[in-house]
Length: 254
Image 1 (cartoon, rainbow, N blue to C red):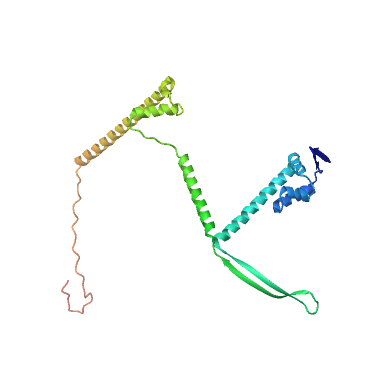
Image 2: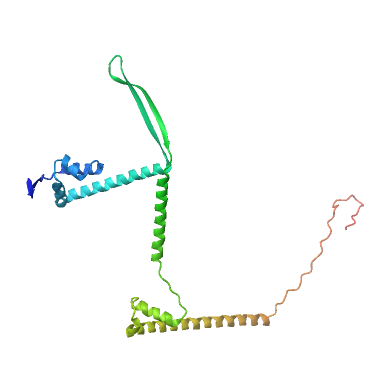
């Protein structure tokens, strides 16, 4: 099928699964761009975007191929960055060939392998450290922005004006609105009542505790402590050092 736009003629190829799979594979391999893929498969760019627009399965396959390609590129970039940060070893091989005297074919005569150590790249290390520092600064900034704003004031009228400002959506002119002023004054009055009740409850609790302590002190004063009489302690008898004596002998300790 051919379609003409202006002076150009485009070949609109019929959609088929084999060509769509080949396009997705070439995108994922990242060997060619979209224009080069279209030339290799002998389709126009218009055909490519027409399929992507009208064929949901083709659109999904192409988008997934782009995602896999980008993931592979990121993985390779991380490997390369790791090598730059840690250092790596490269190998250089030098092969010398010669003509075989019997067969006349080229054969390997010798092989020389050289290893070279490449130290870490200071530029890459600096880039990673700067990126990490920016990330931490961004996290601190976000945490400060999420932290609620707390304003402490000692003056009652200043607090009342701030509450009116908040009630009016932090816009000026709230003090001229009687509904906002009434709502704020009502809230302040309720807060006073709650604080008054709390102070009254605390005063009653302290009074009850004080009365309990006084009763306990009076009880201790009225009931003197009677100590039990001391039990006489018997002195232990001296131990007989000679429990067995011959007849006619007595011990001095008896």
